[in-house]
Amino acid sequence: MKEGMGKVAVGAAVIGAAAVVGVAALVVRQRMKTSGRWARAMGIVKEFEEKCGTPEGKLKQVADALTVEMHAGLASEGGSKLKMLISYVDSLPTGNEKGVFYALDLGGTNFRVLRVELGGREEGIIHQEFAEASIPPALMCGNSDALFDYIAEKLASFIDEEEQRFHQPAGRQRELGFTFSFPVMQTSINSGTLIRWTKGFSIDDAVGQDIVAELTEALRRKGVEMRVAALVNDTIGTLAGGRYTNNDVAVAVILGTGTNAAYVERAQAIPKWHGPLPQSGEMVINMEWGNFRSSHLPLTEYDHALDVESLNPGEQIFEKLTSGMYLGEILRRVLLKMAVEASFFGDVVPPKLEIPFVLRTPDMSAIHNDSSSDLRVVGSKLKDILEISNTSLKTRRVIVELCNIVATRGARLAAAGVLGVLKKMGRDSLTEGGEKTVIAMDGGLYEHYTEYRECLESTLNELIGEEAAATIVVEHSNDGSGIGAALLAASNSLYLDQ
Ligand code: ADP
Ligand code: MG
Image (cartoon, rainbow, N blue to C red; front, side):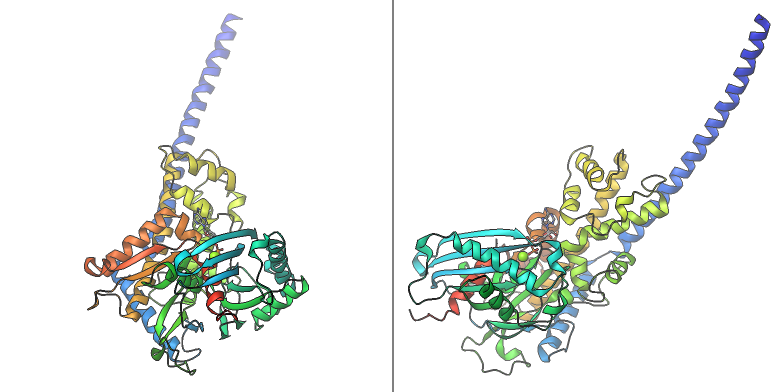
């Protein structure tokens, strides 16, 4: 019995030893497999980083290419991928504007209704108030009436709730500036037809339609008495809003869901302008720079795939590299490839990671900005959004680095864009008079993504050089686009002499 037990025990020990040897072999194999995976994942990161490279020389080529396209777009309609649209804004706010004016700001995920009371030179902006609502996703791809009815309804309830003191004097209609941030072919300061949608909107029956007529009809359907006095986009609104408080503002750049820029051009330098020369000799140009494209842009396989699968393939390439709608999505695509080809998150590809646009840019910036020693924000974002848990610190570090690669490329390219505009204006180097050039910037990406904003500003200084950088100022124009549209409604009011 005892012996027997011993035999059994010995036997078990032998089996145990064999099992230990087996487990050890497995661990070694597993480790080799894991390090093979890690190496493969790092290979993907390294290749991505190389393809995203934006050395100074490349940025200068991008800037030069943009300047060339600006000339071509101004020369003739359809002369360039850059539309260089004539805004019909030939005078910017002076500060003398007076009265109560309204603005509607549509052009992304949120839209805003505003009221501004202007008191002229002495009093400036006496009062401003706004209401914000998000656009239900269904309306972004529905029909035109549904979208404009929704907007008109919000405006109607905004006006219903306003105090008596904001009511217009008898016989005077309310006037509105409409910030509509999509490419529009203007036919006057307050009419224009939609060229195409961007930023995830896709409403077929609105393309080619007069946007002011659409809005005016919807307002009528909702019983709102309002004259649309100015049709602009967010860049022109921001330029106008910036100029109201700072006379040196000559360029506006938006970095939000999408991206665009506007600037003040000499009317004589616009060959395609056949109207009478404006008194000011100037004309604001809406560049629609989101559609810029050049062989110098550092595009990767992920960018190509994102573009092909987008609502607007082949269009808005610069926007797809630089703006808030796309940065998180680029990151998702790289992570997905690492998950599929290098089992970066383990044997199973996290199903959530396969959902397009699941990783939004605000989440990406939170990951990028995580300064905790154990990167706990990264961990919780991965868990909450992608349902990936138990990531190692090493893994999290790699993800932060990927954010840095994507954001740095975007911000540096945006800076190159600004340089291109300054070159066209002859303001990229110190001018004889040493005038200041102020660039009014706005948009949620610029405002909230700290690393992006800092990179953009330092890159611009790097590109311009120390001497000229002293005369180029970047200014955050907070919500200038809404106020700017109201200001332009004021300067294009029917009641100017009253
Ligand atoms: P829109 O461009 O839609 O008119 P905004 O200028 O407010 O509106 O920009 C919103 C965009 O800004 C969002 O779509 C997002 O891409 C970006 N954004 C907002 N908050 C952040 C953030 N914290 N970090 C990075 N990007 C952000
Ligand atoms: Mg906006």
